[in-house]
Image 1 (cartoon, rainbow, N blue to C red):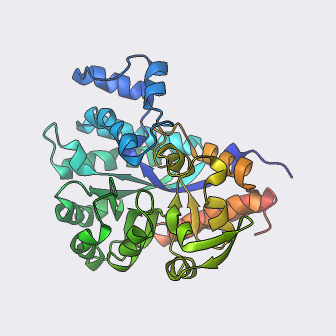
Image 2: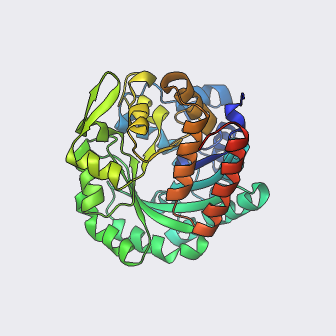
Length: 352
């Protein structure tokens, strides 16, 4: 049986709000507030500039966010961007999404962090009501800033607005995850789960610190766990102690292939280890990270996997089911979606 990747039901755990704006929205919001620093003022030119395929490093890749963040400083802008994010994901077949954002980045215009969260949550609720895409929020603290404990407290206080987790994001180099143990402990003590960016810029030490010092329940990216394995003839034949722990304890990896290519982590799609990790039994999920900066979508990510890593219907079913099983949102809702997508995938030929 044949199937179209665009038609497959999808689940997404790692998508940044400020990395997924529509280009036209950036231009309109900039005009609304008189922001004159966009590198281009036409949609095609701005889209080309935003695409960070040649950035070559995480630090350079992150520089593009200065412009999206600049136009996301009012309640109306935040609400609009959040609504459009849900609408765009739903149009791409996403049934469940967790969208993350750092409230501290949106206070330059005078908003309080609580107002930022409220505006984003309002847009998410409207998007969910309009599309049916179940969407929850993850509040992120930026490693290079110094308010991570305040952000942790904000995440805990925002549960009623759809916040289901806490994240550490930003550059990894020079910012060891273990340094943020107190903030993560505060969140964990309040029974809110943690996911941490690790194994994207720095290597396996960041992954180990995220898991063992910060009690991360999922790892953002995490692909450099492959460096604790032995690969022979395109197969993982041996695992080190950390890789064994991550695989056997089913620590989910929020993998974003296009993003990893654009930050220079791997030179080609074939060189990316997602196929190796998936076939070796790691809890791999597929994600977009930053749809604008990487010019991607969940369908585009699926296409990369089909083209370069031999993914078929069973593989797409497996990674989608893993995302739903390891999401932070309420279990009854995720269970309902698991049963729905299981039925749909099997009707398309999945044997799982």
